[in-house]
Length: 295
Image (cartoon, rainbow, N blue to C red; front, side, top):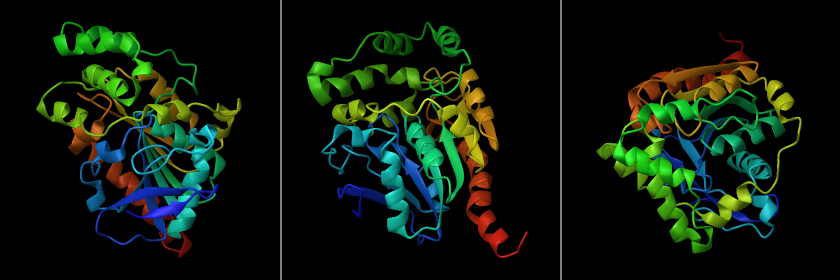
């Protein structure tokens, strides 16, 4: 597994999915959780067959060690690690894809290192820290009540994980609450929910540094095109705040997938690819064609 050096000299791991060689524009994929092993991303419904995907193991997750200073594991400061990875790969341009909590890091990177960013894909992003739109997650939950697995999952979410129990207890809580993250709880969803463990210390570190108070204004200054992918039944984020987040970006657009919760590439893989493929094609090839004087 390849590694790169972070700004503080730490050796961090990353995966490259797909057989194609890396070009001058690379696609970096940031896992959520927070602090979940990126294996749960799979190949994003076969996306790696079209574009090589570079998937870093964030600080304290997977094969990357925890930082010596806990604050360096925050999503705000790990933007420096993403930039170091871009430089290590020799990429002049980058498209960043983030899922769930990973979209916090993706947005942190976009606002701190906009120069080489040619596109941003935010999959089911939490948005309450950036917008004032009231969440409709409660209404989505109420519409699902009466399903035994779902009701048990919501009860787990409304409780609190046993943080004193370490990674094992934290992962057990995540598994108990997993059915609430999907629009349905069938065999595909159940299998996916078991992939990729969470790392409690890394999850804590992820939120140790608050972003600057003017982050919404910085988001409004991001000029790169942004695609937000939402699930119409995403009880984790709701839909209304996610729509508001998409409007915050000058070049933002949103696709809301029906019969879909928090994991669109798993629940609606075909619709996910229909939404993402043309956007990525334009981001990856568009700037290069423009630089060559082509349209």
